[in-house]
Length: 502
Ligand code: BES
Ligand code: MN
Ligand code: ZN
Image (cartoon, rainbow, N blue to C red; front, side):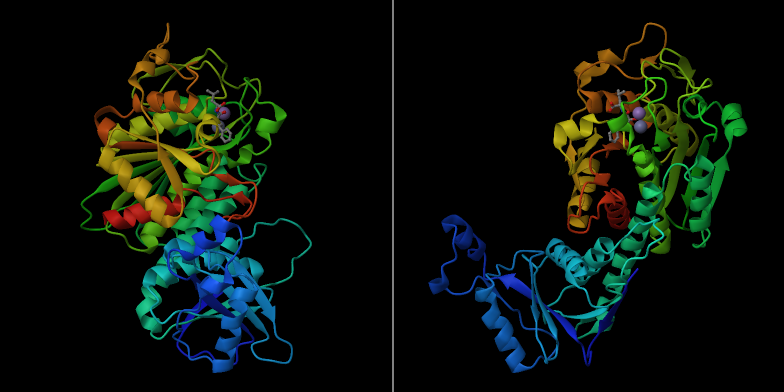
């Protein structure tokens, strides 16, 4: 992770970034409505006064550049000037939009992507807020993430960012929040991007144990197949049975003294999803190493909560299994018995996520009896059909809880959209021979998956949230703080929400 330092008086910088804001609210519209900028009405963007005292001629140059390069100040826009024989030799104008956390996050991501130097200094506005520092740092750290297993090395690029503010100490806590958020999100991305030949359930469990060991107060238990069988985790066992690498249930706990609320987080941890006997077509299968992104998100968020010592009790449950095609794989039409006794007729072996989640939810309700129950999963392709690539589908009977999570995501930069738990569709869950069909043919794939999971929430039914994050779990290209590949979706939302709870 690149080094970010808050500093009052940097000296001798060679590359300088100057934030640029739109001139009041009307400015961007002016340009957009006419399709051209009207210079008579003055520049579209302005340089806010900076904490760092900068030479008059440098400021005059930057101010004169704004209309020339048609800088609007929109969040994440950049213009780089190369200044031969002068210092700084690189001047980067970067738009911060509304100068809120999101605007600064976009600016940080843009700086990380444009800077070729090893070090850059950012002259923050004199009225800088902690939210600005947090957004900037998260943008820098998240956009500079790379996952590569190639032998060839890439050029080093940016390694150090100096953030010039008048009072560094005042902004340290914001930088620390950003550091933990970025570190845990990057950890989740690493796990999700790792190929499934490496990423067996046991390997994933080992990574969680190793990460937890870095934070005093975290405890981990791992259930192996014998134990899972003894306790009746039929869903996890069925899904894992076709694989040469057996399933695990990881239970990671953060239990600080004096915590009043107990949250259980459940995350789908399918280390590879072939679809099983109901095998996926090749295009649909090629990215299925990401099918443990829910597990990665809940584990990373719990690690972050421990690092921040949040006063909330958290139990993260990660049912881990590989859904393979083999002679020992479960079949479409098999009936499995979940933890707690409910049975599912497995109509389609590609609907495997809900089978492992059902066990974990039932276990959470019966054995942990938490105050709040959240599950997050790459559960259905229907998520993207309904909402596109950016929004997760969020389900809950609890308006307050749903709003709190959606709001936390909005602030943190992750989108979720509330979806209906349509009771009319419950009838599709009916099986002739078992309690439930696992893959009812309703036409509303994400909704009926949520309705299926709801059957396992018992008395926690109205304190439960289900997040179907198949769509935003993966990015086809770079996009602000998101880098092509695993996004780490959910970590930022959960960590922010847990922080608000405590
Ligand atoms: N892991 C997939 C869902 C998925 C699809 C995640 C695309 C990310 C991108 C899940 O296990 C699955 O296969 N779901 C089925 C459910 C169906 C069989 C009821 C689906 O969405 O087609
Ligand atoms: Mn599947
Ligand atoms: Zn799956």
